[in-house]
Length: 418
Image (cartoon, rainbow, N blue to C red):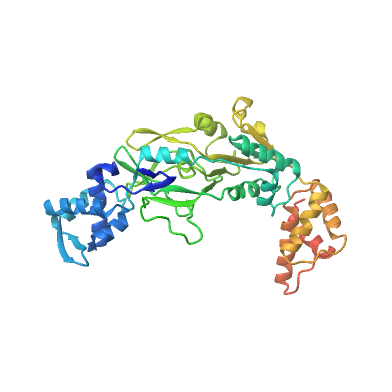
């Protein structure tokens, strides 16, 4: 891996096997699999599929030709068209039994560590900028200040408080604070094994842009927005280490590795298959020292950077999660409480605007009083939830929705449990 002198995040494509830094056997097996799945392929097509330079593909082709593993079928515009012969197909069967991975060539673990460390999250944040990025939410000045302080200070953030007040909504909007782009490798080579990192659901190139911005840049790295990885009750302890698919023999990176240089949101914290104590025990060192230790199915352990903004969101009492010694590791604990009457009215009017409904005079106060009467507190989610029910009732009855007392009373009857 070579970085351009004028931009540390432009990674130059290696043109020799020595610059590539991967074993020849790994490169050979990867090219064999690409050739096998293509059937008949040109060398330029193999370079495109493997993300390797033409020079390296030609070096592999010369080896294939010398060892009589392929047949050269034709020349197409100074490009060779090849297909595997019986010896080549026998060789690829051995490679596929080891692993069915046939994607872009991996990057070296040392290059991955350097790049992730250079791309660590850095925030130049002010109160006005934070409010601007969260402008579609109604948040008190106190919470804005606490959240901004936590983001600038660094470290994991715990959002806690009763349900329905916007903890998840706040966390999901944090990626808006980052407008830069980072490099994500498709895969990383570790002790001769390939660990896949790129996930199309998490790593978005965005705006229809190509993953590679310069012809000279290494296409094994994808240019994308900082990732946002969200997990809830489905989270299990095995998701925190590399996972080998027993069928394909392909090794997948854990959640925190896919979230590197981005945000990892653990929603409904305390309701996972892994207990809070287990999770905090597992991440005591990563949260403190910014490094994590992973292991392969073979037992090989390796170190990666832990450059992740971890955000926990829970509606459980903190005493139910872990004792004080563990909670101290989470320096930034922000309570998201029920909204004030003033903010509740603002939310009612904003939801009406967003749903193109008229808010008759006094109806915001009526909803406020009835919610307090039925629930005992005001949650930020009440206005949207109730007006959605009101709109659903009107749609079923094939009429225009109207924000009136009778319709709202009916919605509340459905919404609030006695």
